[in-house]
Amino acid sequence: MAVGLDLDGRRGAGRESLIPDLRYNDTPGWTVTGGVLTVNAHYQLLTDNLLDLTHETFVHTRTIGNSAVAETPMESRVEGDEVHVQRVMRDTELVPGKRTPQGQK
Image (cartoon, rainbow, N blue to C red; front, side, top):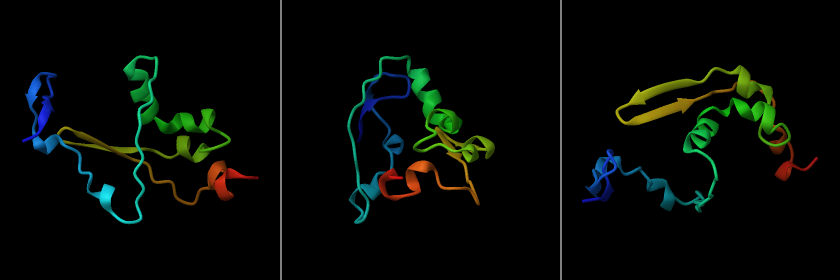
């Protein structure tokens, strides 16, 4: 049984069905990274930044952004307690950071 916080924030027996599927962590060829980044901001700003990647077009123009991110519609669906988001960009230029090895010009 998993122990942690229930969805309502109470400490107790969590539901194992809420534990993310991490089977790829042990798969050869996959690299797992981790860490903590403390951000002195309201949590909703971070959530907005991660869920709305259209900002990449304007903020990250030299690394990961291009106009295709903002121009391509995003598809989303809700499955139970999960939100799945996908943006498929076909026939677009590589972002600047991927054009040459390690983003070199």
